[in-house]
Amino acid sequence: MARTKIVATIGPASNNPETIRRMLAAGMTVARVNFSHGDHESHAKTVEMLRRVAAAENKTLAILGDLQGPKLRLGHVRPGGIQLNLGDEIVLTPHRGQPAMIHFPHPDLIEVVGLGARLVVGDGEVEFTVAEKREDTLRCLVTVAGLLESRKGINAPGTNLPISSMTEKDRLDFDLVCNLGLDYVALSFVRGADDIRELQEMMAERDVKIPIIAKIEKKEAIDQLEEIRDIADGMMVARGDLGIEVQPQEVPMLQKRIIRCCNEVGKPVITATQMLQSMVEHPRPTRAEASDVANAILDGTDAVMLSGETASGKFPVESVLMMRQISEITEREFPYEYFRDRRQKRASQSGSVTEAISSASCEIAETISAKAIISTTMSGYTARQISRHRPPMAIWAVTPSPVTRRRLALVWGVNCLLVDDFSTTDDMLQQTVESLRPFGLERNDKLVITAGIPFGATGQTNLIQVHEMI
Image (cartoon, rainbow, N blue to C red; front, side, top):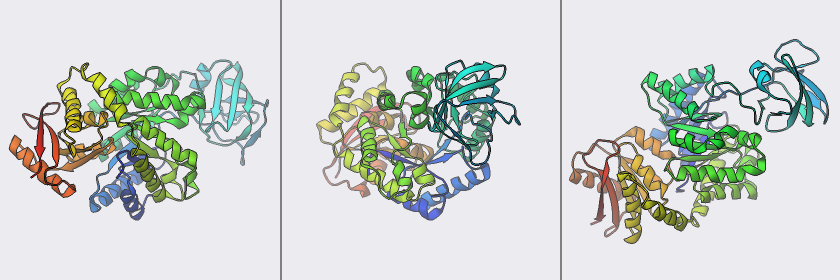
């Protein structure tokens, strides 16, 4: 199986037990529930089905709830839309019933947008420039011609909106995330670390702790990338809206920067949007799409994500299988030596015992040609730190926590086994070895095992042991 994890969005094309079963078999490790669509009742049914099918197939599956965020949309325009030509003039107003104007129900944006600002509709199919502000209206000139349709999303690149990343809808959806016990929550349109703190405060009020994936799709987020990274639990390279906020030609290097930023501290990073877009309609991707997925993997992404391909496309199972096959082939040429060199440069800089042990375990495993590195873990932290170094041998996390097992389904290269609680070193070693024996371990195979003593506490990894199979 691929070491790069696969996130698949669930939608009308995949929201049934048989398709989910086949997607799990094809390589899906994380299911994304997109709160931009559907209602609470349908989401609850989807989550129940995902867990039921994963349990029946004996597969580990994490579930990611993706909050919509403050999506700005046009109001209703006439049926069939309005064909706009280059240089046409339009007027946006928050008031309904103005026949010579376009309804735009966001007075807060109209108030802060400046002259010359860009307004981009959809994925860039139509674009305006603000030419004049009159009280609560905007007179705009069309700079990219196209069809203007009702309820299309609109972005204002470069304009700092005075609104929270958490809308009232997001707050209600987050209550559902908590009630359903989802494994991750993705926060859309993050601008800075304060947006993460706001969601963390909501968690504290509800006495829950769900890892937050910060979606990087705003220019402001790029400017505060390290601060966001340090407070969030992971990131998503949300290339769709990011490619509107900045020039599309900037996105490839920003993607590399975001992936590297997360790799440096061992936090998972997802690369998303249009990775196999042509498979919405066709059974095979383009060569460029295959190369796009491969390059994200070579950069060090933990996971690659499918959106419309599995949510509404004609070939959801084939899309997952193709993603897995691209990953497996690419990983044959994975730049392990690059990560080894980077690990060795960082080894002397770490003041953390766990980080030092994770680095040393990779070093020892490579020196003795170990078959696998084993992390006995409660929280999954040590397994993530080992994964951060991208060792060439298998990584196994052994945990008594079902939650940790599911959350590690997003982390590069980590296979996870659920075991009974252990209380002594001998008990830990025996359970670990016996639980892994069916997975291809043979006599004389060497294992590097990390653990924390005393057992049961998090952040206490302080032991490395080399074990030889008998």
